[in-house]
Image (cartoon, rainbow, N blue to C red; front, side, top):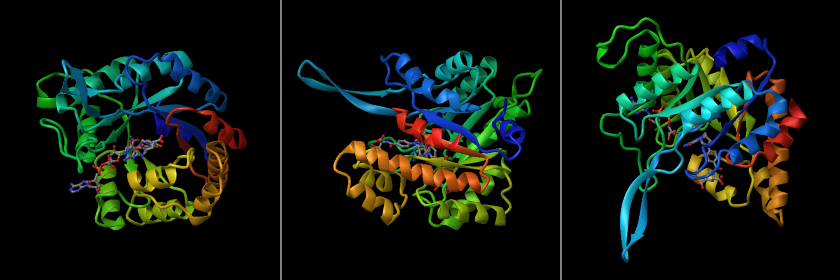
Length: 317
Ligand SMILES: NC(=O)C1=CN([C@@H]2O[C@H](COP(=O)(O)OP(=O)(O)OC[C@H]3O[C@@H](n4cnc5c(N)ncnc54)[C@H](O)[C@@H]3O)[C@@H](O)[C@H]2O)C=CC1
Ligand SMILES: Nc1nc(=O)c2c([nH]1)NC[C@@H]1CN(c3ccc(C(=O)N[C@@H](CCC(=O)O)C(=O)O)cc3)CN21
């Protein structure tokens, strides 16, 4: 079922969802299941599975370093299919522009169609770790909106090159990313919002936000989005701080601000166990306020261990 149908069927009740990363290749999928299992009691209607970019690795060979390009966490669509099969929940694979040609994206969407995956999150994707800025891949899309257009075309039976006859139309429900504190490359929040409006006009059905730690930023963003005519659901993305290092990392990687109260609380912790508890408590307070405001879904970024997400969900769902 589509994410938007889940939201409509919930009739104003806030839903619970979360996001996982595929394991590093070579690792057992059971590890992933062990982190999903404890969250299933909160009945997520859908689970997102990210797609990571290819990266450059160096391998020692006869005293020299061999340079290779590889995707360390492949398997997004396969994981989605097995989760749907195992848990009977919908999944949302992330489709990214970076590292994929339009053809490869089409093949992936065809796979999703055969597997009964009805939702996709259309993203541009991050720059490769060794690049400062995102560079479009040869034969791939430069912006998320182009991906939205490709998926939207497929939904109306238009495949690439229009050489095939279709006897069905795709039915993908399309999610896109939104940035309450603007995307790092965008000159202003208002221009970023205009980009978001373009993605929605091109066919996006819902928005999931970048993590934020001050709900005011989300509420203002939703208001500003409404003011420029964005009417699709805007799902807040929540990330519980888990280690002290996040105080530096998260603002640097995601260009988001941390409230001083949160920084002070984390700073005063003497162990990462305490930091984890502070992160959980902060996310609970954020979630309670967002739920009271009637957000459609609370979407948690669980990038590994899910014990903290479970502790939060227990208080809310
Ligand atoms: N994996 C995930 O769950 C998420 C990943 N992200 C990451 O955030 C990054 C951005 O992705 P998206 O928001 O999907 O990309 P996007 O293509 O919507 O926007 C990327 C940047 O380009 C700008 N832009 C968009 N269209 C433009 C145009 N026609 N001309 C000039 N500038 C334009 C936007 O304002 C923004 O600064 C990616 O690195 C993505 O992977 C963000 C949220 C969630
Ligand atoms: N720019 C961007 N890229 C993404 O892939 C992404 C977003 N934003 N925002 C929404 C979700 C949330 N994602 C993530 C990804 C990683 C962590 C994270 O905490 N990662 C490391 C620290 C960062 C680092 O080392 O680069 C960690 O400690 O787990 C959190 C949320 C993935 N998604």
